[in-house]
Length: 336
Image (cartoon, rainbow, N blue to C red):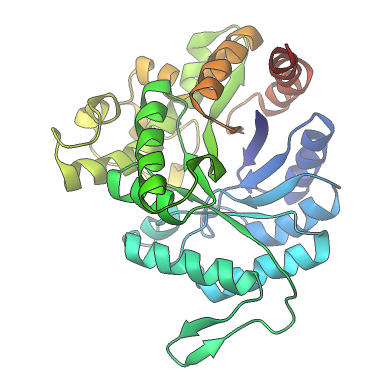
């Protein structure tokens, strides 16, 4: 199992660079950042410094979108970073939540997302794409390659992942939901003639190592609110008794709105509807030993990477605990 870590690009940006360097030293393989250009600092500027300060770790957005970032510009950014730093990027992408909604706009359609994936991957790989004005390519790219990992929860998004994505991003660490989403992705991949095992499965959620569960829940409750934005869209599309498991949808019944000015922050006042049970299911909390046990379950269900969100008051401590205790324990268990 690989390990990634996601940061918010709050200033000072140099702190993110230093944490990325430390993450590489501790055995993390990926370092990600949110991409919401109004709420936080510009990620791609910081990505260049994250890559410059490290040697092996891969870097990317978690996640970008096709609306606030034109796909041709996104392709050029990744092609440039890969040319400079030896192909050490991954493009995480979704329909757009905070980056769009903080501007009063809706997320893109899945059709727009699928077209963006095609354009980004082809142009970043040095290949031609058909655009309204004719066929275009980035002329200086030679034998480029870019993996595109797609975030989603609903049946149609999971079908898209199975058909076209290099990786699947599930933003919660609940084994029940992982089992359901992964079965949909695999079915779609097989129907499209793809090998499902070639799709990287990345589970992402807040992780907090320590003994005070009550405090950890308080610090990570925001995550249930963030996921609830996507769940509300699913309920609106499929209904309360639709295809989406009630284990994912039931908890938002008390949801009354969402304050994007506090997006991804422990002090978000509009996430109080999230019950303790959901926080514990969706996140990875407790002692290092409890983290190891939950991660074993996720790995055995098919997760290739666990990506921990560090948006709480113990960022450094949790990062160090993963490097000293959690990552080695999973590695030793896999060897046995």
